Image (cartoon, rainbow, N blue to C red; front, side, top):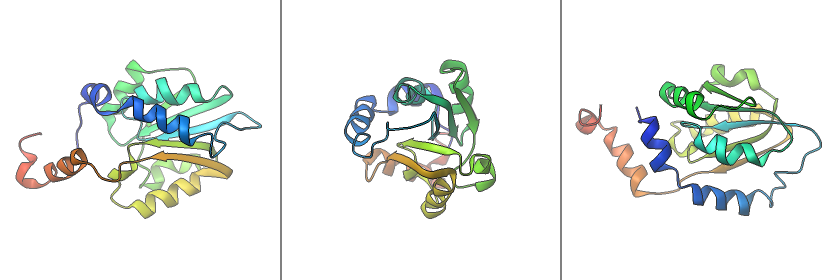
Length: 166
């Protein structure tokens, strides 16, 4: 899939829903409670708008915020438009262990917003998430259960329609 990073960030992510998810869910799992500086991973950061504007402010005691996406153009746009000294953007795939193993056992908090429903191998993705979290680490994952948009995107991956959007 090759999404336009400029259009994706501005039009696709419903920021109000993400804010509500953070407001309602994070206190329940004591996500902000910490005794040390957090090392955070944002899986599926896209062009970085959500990482910069919504995830970064959640962590007043932040050591580092790693933000990953499988698409090079997303990371390129994130670095250009949503950079911050505490954010490190990388091309990586949570389903591909060699691309994320450098953070094994180091992540105290993990977030993923509207990303994990795209995984081909959900079990492997969640196994890798578990391996990345340090003991006592926490994950806040917001994903789509069912949507017309998601169904349409999956259908467009079909070779019958591929030539129309490449």
